[in-house]
Length: 244
DNA sequence: AACGTAGCCAACCGCTGTCCG
DNA sequence: ACGGACAGCGGTTGGCTACGT
Image (tube, rainbow, N blue to C red; front, side, top):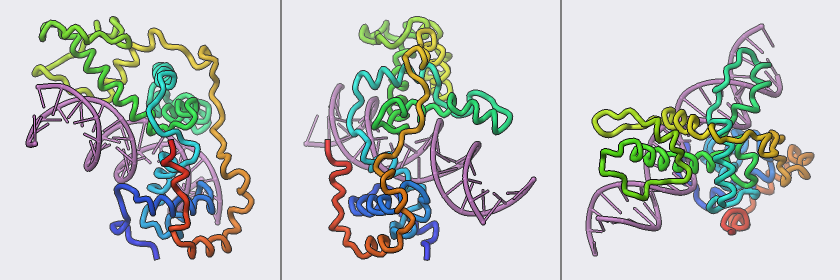
């Protein structure tokens, strides 16, 4: 009996939940998340389970700050591709298939950064851009406290700063769209194409951990029974995500 | 020491595409 | 051909922490 929607757990995951999820992903693979969520006994939606796995528990993930190289790559790729699905219109599913490679940007960028997730990159970018927008705002309005001398950022182009930002009531609240538009306009001046970077849209990363067990994934009856009787204490999750 | 602010990150939400019966 | 289930994506939010005043 699946719990009703309002009974589903939300919020931060506990270590026990993580352990359970890892165990069941090993059995079921990275698919059928709803089913996995139900049989695991996790009081979570399949969606939530998938997100937890993809963004945190996946063994290939790298935890920790981005390196300067990674940051630079993110900036370059984003300057080229933008961030949003649907930037390039398409009128049919075949058009979609043809242009998909250019518009699923966060996940696409993530493919060039092994061990990083689209969510992580998105978060990084958002933080980065907020800072950049603020820098630009201050440099665009010199009348307000003749520049605190340190607002010069190497990543903030004069051209972009010259664009300025229309402000009303002294403070401009930026929507993400506005930020994207401005940054894209500024950065695209010096942006490199993926091809120029020596990059080509790679295939989705394989899931090495599961490939060798794919044929056994769906004869899970026995394993499932086993899993359901195994105490959570037996699960060694710490290897997955608390290592550095 | 207390308070306020900014940055960071995990998680949720809503939408869209794909798959399959 | 159609509709429902599933999967994946970008956008957004909320909480925690570090830092400055």
